[in-house]
Amino acid sequence: MTVGKDVSQLFPDVINCMQIDNLELKKLVYLYLMNYAKTQPEMAILAVNTFAKDCNDPSPLIRALAVRTMGCIRVEKITEHLCEPLRKCLKDEDPYVRKTAAVCVAKLYDINQQLVFDQGFLDLLKDLLSDSNPMVF
Image (cartoon, rainbow, N blue to C red; front, side, top):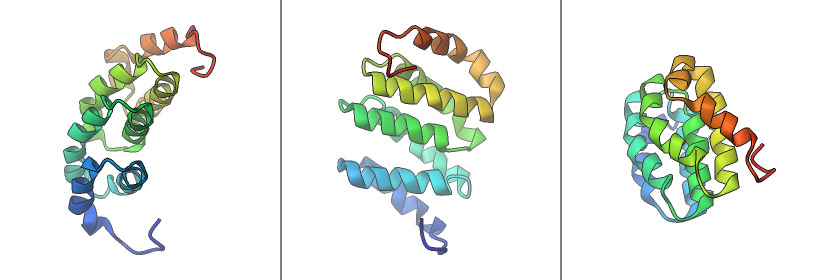
């Protein structure tokens, strides 16, 4: 991503750029977060509110991008904060968002199995198996 240069010190500045409306820039910011959240877990917590906000965005692309990024951030400290936005995306009106949220549950299971059971995400996944849109499963 950075041709071998350590850019983790830019984390606070990148967090500030999460509020941007431009989809292409938002993708780059989220890519940075996926790559560097493990090195700065305390700073990664600051991204949770923006993920929750983006999961309510009118654009299904933004909602799916937010939930995909949440699933790729492998920081145990923030997983419990991402449960509500993930639950909302699993029930989203858009099939692409639902599909992306289902993949996020699998990634969350890899990080914290007990949380997936406690939050009832497996039942929500079972519901998606019978989704009317074949794109979901």
